Image 1: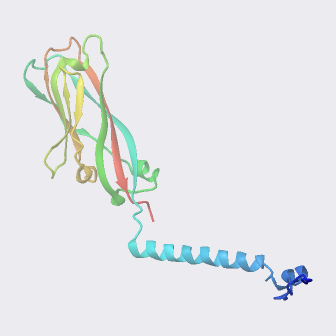
Image 2: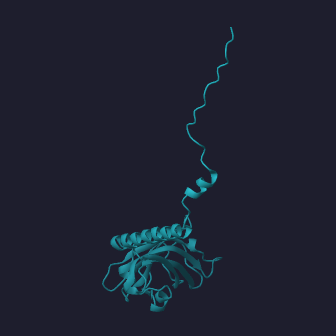
Length: 206
């Protein structure tokens, strides 16, 4: 008996796509269009950001400082162990000083003493520690005195009050007054220099 070999029939289910047709069907990339859409998106974001800032308001306030100084003299006749008060010492703030920072007196928002040093003209014989205590105040013709700083001789250290003195700065009659208690009298009248820094917040000149 002869058995015939069985050969299955191959049924075609489709033909492989032509390589050339694949490339032909791909959509070309339009780089100019992509760049245009990208720039439009950035512009739209910038417009929205500007609108939000305008709605919320951007505070133009900035901070700057001015270093200044004044002198006072301790006389040989200063009463030892008793409180001594100096005459008022003018503390002028010129328009030019403020304009150099692109602002004016009317645009100031706050003013504070943020640094203060007490320097003796004779540190060997009459240093700052010759004071038991020394307090520095600011006052005007219409405003009561306010303490700016206190020097403590035992610690040879100055404590700042950081109080806002803007109303005093804006008053042209402002002066500094010092109250101190000396633990000894100088052999000669001795000059002291107070170096201080006023830190301001302000709006710029429009």
